[in-house]
Length: 301
Image (cartoon, rainbow, N blue to C red; front, side, top):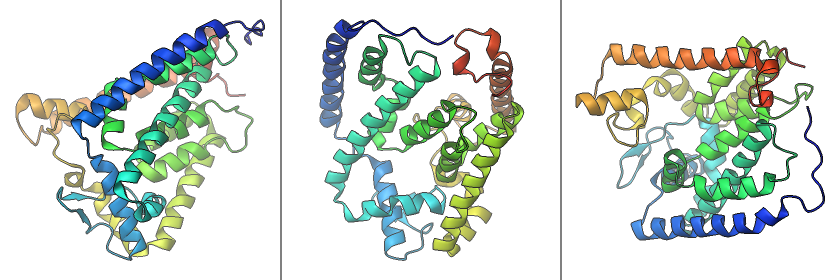
């Protein structure tokens, strides 16, 4: 049932208090970040990838000076990073921080919309509060700390999931997200299992188109990535680092080993399949669940 139109001025009394609280939280976060002198090292890796593209260097032989970090994303992502090669690192940090906070606000807005609250009177206040306080959540805090692309990936996926089934371009966001970071491809599996075949096809087509663009622009790097580096888990960092919040990372820290073993991997796969099964079951039951918009209606319209 669509939300009833809010009365004029309804909910407006909450906007200013929400804005003030959000601003105070963001100021505290920025002050803490400034005090800790975070380098945004992942942003520096992206910049180095872009510089490798601009200067015609071997993308996957590149190592970030002082950190010995390698490129891990597909060549298409490196093409997107290329403009950063002409920006000073200090300036780029400011740009990335502002963009990420803006993307966080967009992610909160899309999440509220996905939950079916887009027309409610407290929407603006919810977005303000969500943006201001979500910076303290570990995934968001880490993304902002390292200057990562995760919020952009999240917004691309949410953008697709909030679009009408009748939209011919639904799936483009998931396809682009997958072309940048591979892992969002799991949503294509979800789309197939929930019989959203057209959206899945658009996602796959977009991914293939972006990958082809990367191949045409960087044929050597593309060949190396898709045949070798995609499967090389050593390039993504040490598995036992606390920043690795995966089940494999947790097991590595608990067991004090860099190789948790196949049993841990099997458990991680099982948990992933269970989560996917829950999402699919929820999607198929969306018409009888509260906040059905958050799961996607079944059958698709």
